[in-house]
Amino acid sequence: MAAIAFPSVARSQRPGRPALRLVPGGFAETRPSPGHRRGRLAPLLACVALVVGVWFGAGALRSAATPSHLARIPGAVVSDGVAHYVARPGDTLWSIASRLDPGGDPRPIVDELAAELHGAPLEAGMSLILP
Image (cartoon, rainbow, N blue to C red; front, side, top):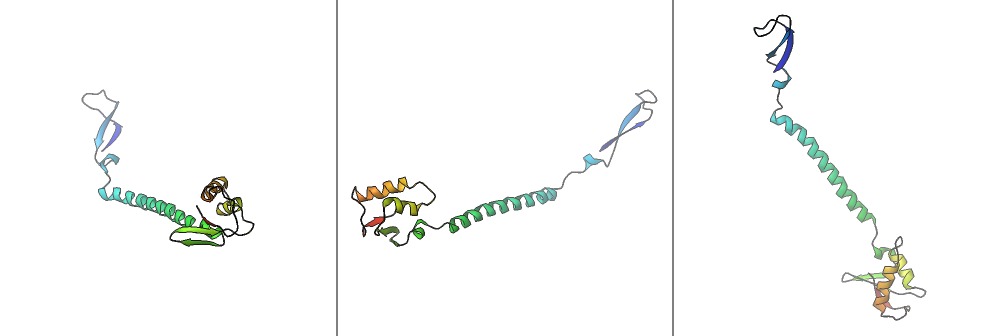
């Protein structure tokens, strides 16, 4: 319903003062239909699904584009899910660790490889299990 103010003479009012009278067909009469809510909800859900799909798709592409540690070290062999590397002449634990994680800190990897050797020096031909 809508309210319209116009000058009129009402019984309880003095003449010349505006009175409010309710008339049918105003803005308050219109209510959204149930289909209208669904009409607003569907695009919202589609946008949320699109964002989630892009999020997971980008993660899958990022992981697929990142080569594994084994792809960076020539000579590494995978058997039964374990990666073995045979040391070559001139290899050090530091050089192997640097090739495993080129952008990171090689010290934790060096510690893992040194623990595997039990204090023995690295020699060419030794087989290491890569972390």
